[in-house]
View: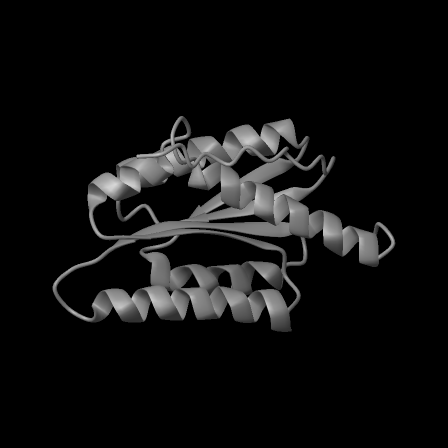
Length: 158
């Protein structure tokens, strides 16, 4: 597999507070993605809280609930959906993506999308591993970049 690790710089967003919303359905994959998210958060001089949800489908609802507390600058959605033998995969992937996009556009939330949609667990492990795909770190960079954009257009206010 070619090197697909995100080489973009980590946005510096000092004081930003992120909420990591994790589906640990595939524990090993989720753990690797969390490690990547934690490393990027530290480099960005931001802070990170975590909550866990049953599956990828529940991630958008958890973010919607958490956003009402008005204490987070951004959110990172981490999960994994592995294709199975039924159409369940398509529904979970499509609806979780749609839910996160709606929160981003309609509620103007800064969200990093880190829900892996893969054919098998081996693909997920490669994408999740901070040394290979680092999708946890990459989605955290995206959330931080969106926080920076929000701050720019809000005059630096949360």
